[in-house]
Length: 214
Image (cartoon, rainbow, N blue to C red; front, side, top):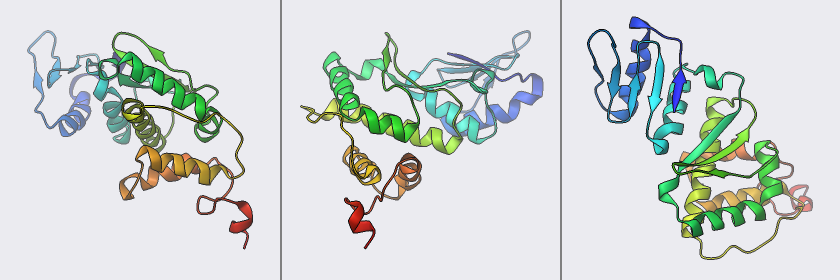
């Protein structure tokens, strides 16, 4: 996919440096008249500041890294954001499991992420999650990307999904347990868990509200 950064000439260099740091690969630049940067096999930046990313698996991480360096493409300024996973990593059965997981936790995922739908779209290259009507902060985008990646992992590893969507007394505790089951464990996910629980009611430490009030 292409992203427009409205950068030309030497103004592109800081963005290229951020991409080099991310990929651990040295950029090469073609000669006149194109003056196009190539970073690895799947990333190019032309002389008009148009970034092309041909690796769906890394696309989200690349955009997140660039946003952390202050580079936000025109396509994402005050616009909807779609997180995606590579289609070739999932079988049709995996997609069915993913749908079952999302259906069983639909209400609380909507509340936690502030989204109106948990539907996903599938084409030959990507599984897209068009859940966000506005551009999240870099920390939020990192948390949401980690969450969706773990949902995908669970869909590939689960044999059977049980349970139906229902209202819960203590949203934070219920969703925290779900996050831990997905594998969002340890200090590396601490900030992501905090963000994902921030819009929910209740206590993450106690299952029942009366226990939290003691």
